[in-house]
Length: 217
Image (cartoon, rainbow, N blue to C red; front, side):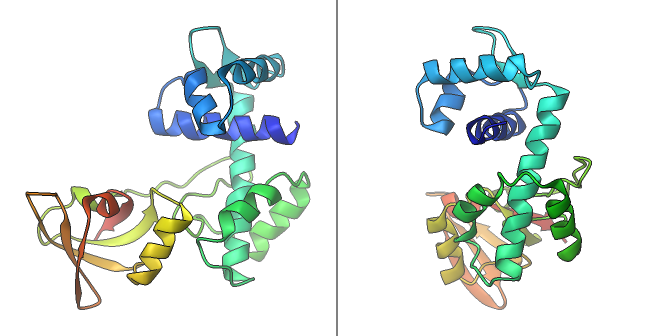
């Protein structure tokens, strides 16, 4: 596959995972920041390679071959993110763009050795699951911080928004994966949330709380 074909597969995979249904060419075009006509041309190529199920005006889904191929691209991306953070001391807001380049490396042997070298991690630095060499994913039960009730306690296990701006904000507030967060209260006026982390009380907006995944303790 070309880099462009891999990027399209990954985009469809992420859209399918979030929508849990077939995705439209317009949704793909928006994610890829391109024209719908360009998406249609690419979908025809991917369909010819048995990577997507595509019929005009009926949405798109991945075939089993396409799903596995997409998972392998995601696997490479997330393993490289772990490597960059754990071994090269990049911060979690710096690694996405670099991993975007590294995910196109073709060597399966290299990626499997990288996986072993890192101790076979199951999650990337943002808390997203890493598929294993067979495409299997270990999923953890998680929910958004904004959905918690008063006095519930959760461990931060991931972020919904992986933008550099959001991750830098979390660093400023000393919120990271593994942080123990106690949900104190929610303001009815603007749905802002008061939380407690390491004996610090902190007020955060509903937007922030809606982008943090926690696992209840």
